[in-house]
Length: 102
Image (cartoon, rainbow, N blue to C red; front, side, top):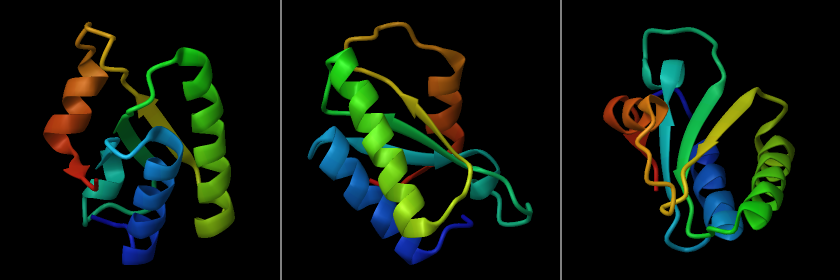
């Protein structure tokens, strides 16, 4: 996994702050591969928050906080509300190939 311990701590703390205490976070994509170079930070999050409007605000606050604390990097966030029952391929891929951070 190509994240520093500081980056992991910032991501986890910000996820709890913005998405709730029971939020779960996975890193997936190229940053999981130690042999890869570069790449954006792909995060899959199962938030405690479920209200769609609140989730949009929370996602924006989360990204702003990450950019302030870990720098201007490309960060992609996939959110899955527990109320959303459809199992999209991106959800499965993120959990199966990713590393759970929180």
